[in-house]
Amino acid sequence: MTDLTATGVAGSVTASRTVTYKSPTSRGRLPVLILFLPPALLLFTLFVILPMGEAAWYSLYRWNGYGTPTEFVGIRNFTVLFNNGAFSQALINNGLIIVISLLLQIPLAIWLAMMLANKITGVVAFRLIFFLPYVLADVAAGLIWRFVYDGDYGLFAAIAGFFGVATPYVLADRDLAIYAVLAVIVWKYFGFHMMLYIAGLQAVDRSVLEAAEIDGATGWQKFRYVTLPLLSSTVRLSVFFAIIGSLQLFDLVMPLTGGGPSNSTQTMVTFLYTYGVTRMQVGLGSAVGVVLFVICVTLAFGYKRIFMRHD
Image (cartoon, rainbow, N blue to C red):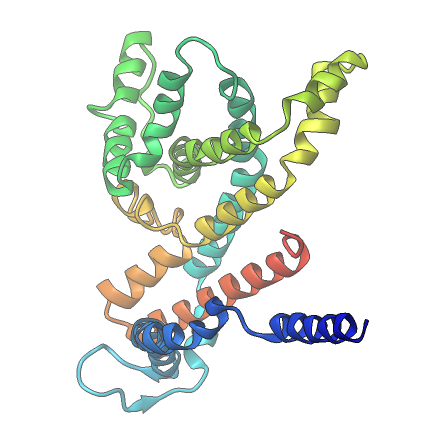
């Protein structure tokens, strides 16, 4: 009896000791961190932290990019920036792009994803057709649509000539150019969101939809009360990508309109390029970069904190 008790106690002690031991994975984590973390931090510091710090520093100077900045102006660049009508228009355009992305692009992507998530004849070809604009380089897409909108030799001119109406010079019209850009943005990026939703729909349990159908739910009711709630995490991710991408839009606008006519299609990034690079107002351009960084970081962390805290 004593031997059994001693054996049981020894076994309990051994078990407790075994539980308190660290796993081989935990013991081997420190060398991995020491090996891989410093190079990653070095690269992040060199290519992210230092450029951000330099941009914040340059934004306090009036500087043309040559030599060392010496003319300290404080927050004057920011004052000039927010009193600039072109920058105000750029802010409005970025806001308009976000609204169109959320109200038109994402619903269109969900609608197409609902149709193309099923196994039907030719579904792969249709997915490829709708996703192909996103694969196309932004600069190439901008040049293609610039030719399409061309009032002399483009597709719009050919259509107008066929119907015998006056040719619209869309990109030369200050009131219409931004809507032409918005149409291209929707065409270019909705395929990316569509593929996100297709992936999300493929993860939905079909038995849940079948149960709703047996209970007599209509197609809209199944989408509203079953499919959409199950896609909520995908929708939140898609909205996040749409907002951040809208704030950083540049490659598509420059070959399409260059921010014109009369700064009517400027975005914050094209404004930064126009004034900070081509006009060599590096201090003012750096101020734009600081404002853009603050807006993006605020929106990203705020959105993550409010809408994606459980994802």
